Amino acid sequence: DIQMTQSPSSLSASVGDRVTITCRASQSISSSLNWYQQKPGKAPKLLIYATSSLQSGVPSRFSGSGSGTDFTLTISSLQPEDFATYYCQQSYNLWTFGQGTKVEIK
Amino acid sequence: EVQLVESGGGLVQPGGSLRLSCAASGFTFSSYEMNWVRQAPGRGLEWVSYISSSGSTMYYADSVKGRFTISRDNAKNSLFLHMNSLRAADTAVYYCTRSNQNYYYMDVWGKGTTVIVSS
Image 1 (cartoon, rainbow over the protein chains, first blue to last red):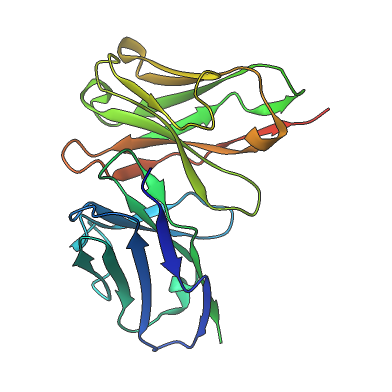
Image 2: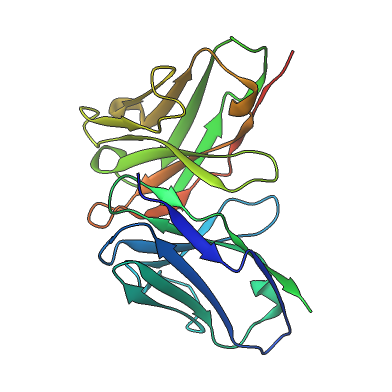
């Protein structure tokens, strides 16, 4: 099984900050890495697929990068609506999610 | 509008059974692979099961293998999850999701249905 490890588990940031979340796979997953955003009481929402492709309707302040085992989600300028929990997911061999990163207001 | 609506959740005793349903609309259901994903209270997301567009191929997480069965009715635009031998650890919100046909990411999610396993 492929394990996904996100860091940090949580972070505090201010509006306008640049935020970076990392995700590491236990083996190479090529570019089969996706990112989701989840707000309390809501279903997850797809942000980025295949490492760096922005899902339709997602603001351009979100970006993704990486390959192989190491991946990054970046929010270039944090907005009030971005406070949420973010999950990475590998879709290379079945599906595995990271444990999540909670982005909180500083 | 593309939509997935889950139903069938509820309170069930340990060892009991439940069938979840997911009604799809706004897209050609029979062309898409589908999944169930769950989230235990206060926990992260866990993939549960996958079914191919034709229903001929299914995969399961080790945690539910042998107890859960995924199925679909393309004529009725519906996805199902049959859950047997339920345990307290199966308590979660269960989401129905649509998989992209090429990269297998989950691009459409339902709002979820809650399953509570407790005596």
